[in-house]
Image 1 (cartoon, rainbow, N blue to C red):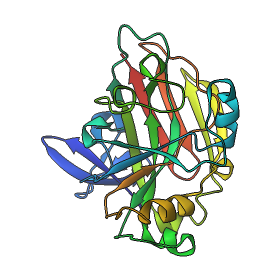
Image 2: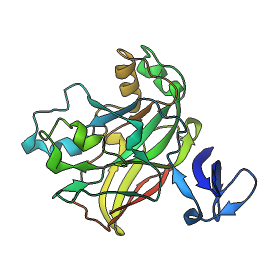
Image 3: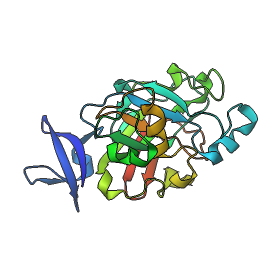
Image 4: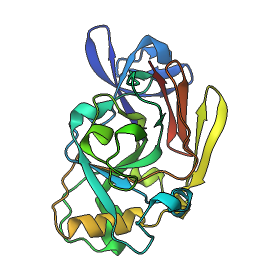
Amino acid sequence: MRTARVAHAGAIHEARPHAQGLQLPDGRALAEDQVVWLPPVAEPGTIIALGLNYADHVKELSKELTQTTRDEPLVFLKGPGSLIGHRGLTRRPADASFMHYECELAVVIGRTARRVRAADALGHVAGYTVCNDYAVRDYLENWYRPNLRVKNRDGGTVLGPWLVSADEVPDPQALALRTTVNGRVVQQGTTANMIHSVAALIEYLSDFMTLEAGDIILTGTPEGTVNCNAGDQIACEIDGIGRLVNTLY
């Protein structure tokens, strides 16, 4: 099952996919541009983001890093104000010289997880969605420790369009992902290349913090990030999960 949250005609609705675009609970079928798309998680809890969780991305930045594939996960937190939905607009700061997308698999926790073993971890997942977690490289304190101004910007974390239930994703480590900028493919990868798998991340995190329903884990991005400018349309797609579109302004 896959669901979305949208605003239409003064109300918020839970939508389902339809050949025309989406369908509201009352049966109305609408095109994608007839609604305002919201993040698909109604009440997001703690947003936990991973940096440098793809081996190819670590290699891509190897000249700037002290991080290695043997280190513990690089984790940071984000507030819910950073989230916007599919087809939304994200501001590109006027003084930024290098701002890029990050196509990521987002994991939504479905039930409390505390000291969960990796073998049992996926049983605590409600579902998956697509994330585009923008970064402004100019604002980084250094190349391997994201700071608050880079990663907690209002509207800088795009989520959606669909929340796909975990039973539709038998193996979250076997998903191809790609990003296009104005229709041109600029990033391709596979979740098989994660350094720390979804299950391993849940085991790691739940060892020292309680994960609750509605918490979101952003699992990192592969290599292939390039600078984007105001007016660019960025689409992040993960096979079986969805295609998430956003425009910089």
